[in-house]
Amino acid sequence: MTTAAYKPEIDEIRACYLGADDLKVAASILYNAYFDDPLFNDIFEVEREGYENRLRSAIREELNAFWDGKQPMIGLFEHGRLLAVACLISPDAAFGAGRYWHWRLKMLLTAGFLGTKQMISKEEKVRECIPAKDYHMLSFIGVHPDHQDIGLGHILMRGIVGLLQEDNKTEGVGVFVTLPKCLSFFVDGQFELVKELEVGDITGKVMFRKKLKG
Image (cartoon, rainbow, N blue to C red):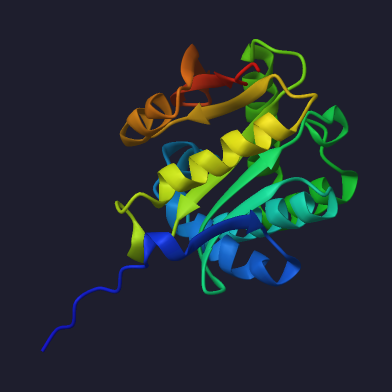
């Protein structure tokens, strides 16, 4: 006998910043969200043995760097259970394309030289396209695979917009979209196409959402 899939109560969902204890679950959610992403497939060589470990390691090191750099990581929780997460880079350029030297070292040891170089190159190319000086970058966004297609992504988007409105410095938020199925989500979130961009063998779309005035 099969049981119906559990669906969280939308009214019980709350958005708040992640704590250190949430990073492991956040990494698992993002691993599933980006496992089939063509950009990550290319950077971490999906055809070569060990892709899963390289991707897990990269996401883990990214989240650790976000935490160390006090960058905003928004989570959706139901009774303490993390269901969705979005990770952003703030307008502080010191954390931007350069990252930290120890992050680079860890990435070299876990993801390899080529993967680390391509990740840094990707971010630099995307940033060159953003039509703003001070802005957030949406690096990761994902919903638990058991709770997709019930509106959690849109709740998370509202949390991102709220973050923008509370930040006096930011002009908006940018994102690099490589999965066609995700385009409508960002269009619905009032992101506008800036430029199509090739990174390695992958073509994606740089999109930007301006901060609402007033």
